[in-house]
Length: 427
Ligand SMILES: Cc1cc2nc3c(=O)[nH]c(=O)nc-3n(C[C@H](O)[C@H](O)[C@H](O)COP(=O)(O)O)c2cc1C
Ligand code: SF4
View 1 (cartoon, helix red, strand yellow):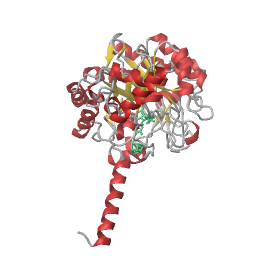
View 2 (cartoon, rainbow, N blue to C red):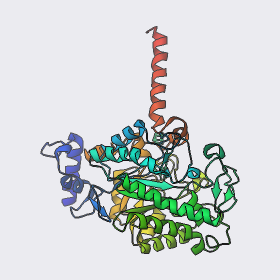
View 3 (cartoon, rainbow, N blue to C red):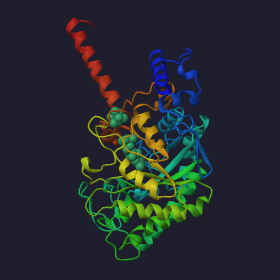
View 4 (spheres, rainbow, N blue to C red):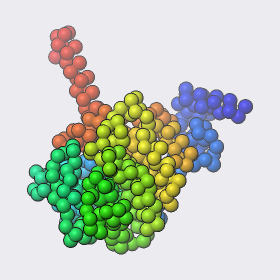
């Protein structure tokens, strides 16, 4: 009976765009709306607020870090960057993670990448946090050293790495870091985090995924060192643990420190799931506040665990890292954030309800629709409009971040219109 009633209510609401009393969805309190779709009132809800080390987020959605290619050559903030984050901040996302920012000049990974390597960057970064604050949004800075996934033309020197091993994809032979350079890099992570805090970011996220330098240290195939920063997993994880400890020292105990970590690299001799779980457990014991679980490096074969998979959900399943992510949720005493191909409110809600992760992170859906969550909350719960074509991935470094499918479609529509005009002789 109850089930049937609920189905009728859902249908009525769906067909009329409002509740049975005729009120449109947007006037309904969220506590009313979501139980209609998902069941009991006391269930965890993706639109419930959540607190991470004292930082209260309005809901459980995260905008996963997204490289914008809109900074100056030295990584300074531009008006275009401020405008992009102002727009996202209007979208009611629980936590916005800004695109990766390089902690020292040779850690840069792409043109127009944000920099956080000098105190001079702080004022510009504060313009981004100011834009977020104007709309009540919470915002985090993601900090990175790209290591061997960089280019001599970009940084003006040979890229550095734990060992002199190139990626198959880029084929660029990196230079092995000396011990003193590793110590300097660890210091620089701490300084970058301090700058993020000074610029008004609500949290900082260490980028230790997708094959960048700290990820390179963890993996056997890229770290062949025989000193204390290599060898067994404990040695290979030392650079990361010391970077985390340095960050914690500079930002203090009550500032949220997050990490994006690969569940696995999905390449031979890359980081393995069991190893990553061990690293995550150690970090949790050291006090990390949240772990965003991703996967894949530049050399990963597209069908076998790439971080940014094409064709979701038509050709690839939604939430493609979920079978791995849930293992972190079971094993690790820290907030776990799921990322990778999440496209529907229903999947988001079930990940949370089934206890597979605590927060839901998306990247491409928010490129296409910065206000996706407002749409879902208004009652239009159709999937994210992003079709995971990955045009943004290919084109962003050259043209700046946007959804290129929208642009391409508009161009196609215009061409079709022009063609029709030509056929009918219109001007
Ligand atoms: C254009 C673009 C830029 C990205 N930049 C970053 C980045 O700066 N840092 C990062 O950790 N991941 C980055 N990613 C990966 C996403 O954060 C995310 O892990 C991945 O796209 C899977 O999530 P999705 O299916 O919701 O897009 C980027 C992805 C895209 C498409
Ligand atoms: S270009 Fe647009 S539709 Fe294609 S993956 Fe990027 S955001 Fe999605």
